Image 1 (cartoon, rainbow, N blue to C red):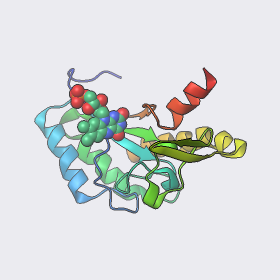
Image 2: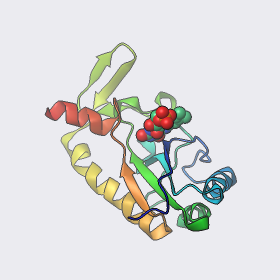
Image 3: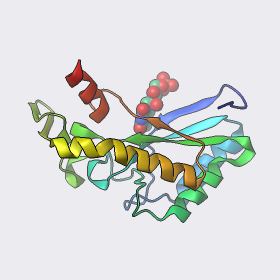
Image 4: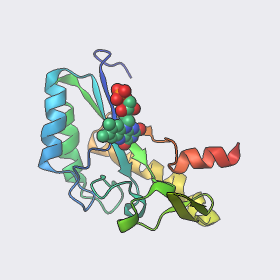
Length: 164
Ligand SMILES: Cc1cc2nc3c(=O)[nH]c(=O)nc-3n(C[C@H](O)[C@H](O)[C@H](O)COP(=O)(O)O)c2cc1C
């Protein structure tokens, strides 16, 4: 991927989704403004494949149940002025937002400020296909690329630590 300059707006979960996992007019405007301001690429943080492991209720959720038209409008807003708009694919694992999720990680944890149940081996086997499906839908909607989220405490980093 060749970007038009070196300025990239790093992934941030913007909490601007509508609560059903769909983008809002505020998001269309935000990414359009960054694009028209000259940024080469913006990355929307924490776009989920499953609603049950969101990091916040305002996360986008892009899966087979999503209304792709609304994601297409978002992608088009961020493509103005030859900019790129990418989605960061997330699964919040043990850090899933407690009021709306049943947090699960690779192992059950009961630590101060961090507790979750264990994913089953079937759950774990399913996750790569979910990430792939969201990436495919992102491409169909017109986003320029995806980034895989693996920050400390979230699902993939915990899997990595478990493997090490
Ligand atoms: C409000 C906010 C939300 C963020 N959300 C994410 C996120 O969803 N995914 C991620 O990988 N990093 C996230 N970050 C981290 C940023 O992408 C970035 O790495 C961090 O702010 C350090 O860069 P800076 O020194 O330029 O601020 C977030 C940061 C902020 C301030």
